[in-house]
Image (cartoon, one colour):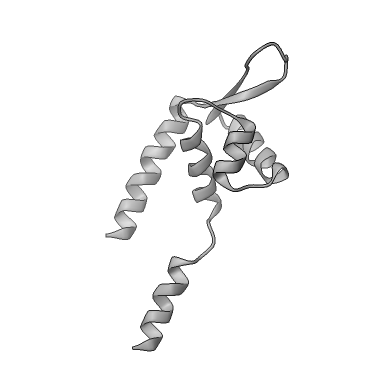
Length: 98
């Protein structure tokens, strides 16, 4: 019996997968978000976040734009393709948890 409880605990405390992190970033940026907001909400370092943002931008799941007069792109928004990814991610997650 103790063994079964231990297995359940291991699954509950497992690390996030790359797909989980991507879904988290995309969900934070659905309404649009700054880089620092995404970084803190996704619990990533700046270096990790930059790698994920580059990956998502290259694949068309995120767009970036300038906000304000700074001239530096710092505002990110999830694209239609990114929202489709989120729907598929939620559907798969629902299938795995039932």
